[in-house]
Length: 443
Image (cartoon, rainbow, N blue to C red; front, top):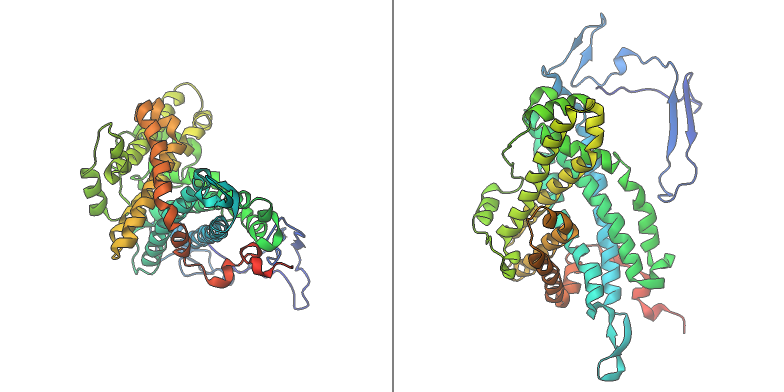
């Protein structure tokens, strides 16, 4: 794959021969972005228009490249896609934080229903557990994703500024960027919608910005690659992480390889390896309810799910490839493929969160982040509770303890609600919503 400069208009702005451009007109959001369509019909591009840093074509048609390995050359060229996915994911996460900030501060002002034993006062809606359950887990996920995003940006910078970047690390980076782009944009869609609903009718007013945030970020799940396709890319990298010559396999070829090759694989840790290993080594593998707050136990539960799902995908591919065509075999296990990739992304995010807390020098802030991390980990387990119970990683009693644990962490974090959204570091002009300033309402 190579990039070309292709002229599309003449000096007067008219389409060149073979080029057709048109406008996309109105979209559901992003009115300031001028999107259009472009079509080419037998357009010839001069050889000198090739951007030839990584490959060139001589006048006699001979191809040359400073990168001998075709696979490494390919992944070097698509590095620009990685930056796009990093940017889109980061933008979606930022929008989610703005929405959660607005909804949380509104919940710290808005009162509803009489307080117990005091008919003259009303209860802040943030004091209701159900409201905490709506917002705090999403705030926790925002923190978790930001730690993972920071780690991704750092790795992207290191690799793309290196004189001789490692090809395998570049492939891993591509998968990581794809997975976190999907995670961030899906989170934004969910968080902004929940924030809108948590503000009631006021959340639907344009002046309070949540509707515009939802409209502008909705398409981020499609930008830079559909999220389901990107999640499959993550799974492909996991299943073929140690085979240099199969990166460009079609789904059919991938099935044949995975069915015959993928067995036991060594888990690659993503954050600070020594920190995570120490955390896992100090876990508490018992049925006591308090063990669910043990960080090592949480990390191990995430790792066990990922490993089990990956091996399950491989077994299913192997079994079905003996019964049907390779394409049909792949098609039949796509739900398991997506589940395995999601488990991997969740584990990557949790490990980044754990490593981030470890680097926090402020003990008071660290204590709060520990509770936020508990809430993130337990929320992920609760979201996939059925799988954990079905595969006997959780007893029914311990599954109930997960729910109690989430409720406990919501109560622990309630006094820190404003601190948590202040901690997002959103510039003050971007935090504005009319409903947060009742002094501006007409008399």
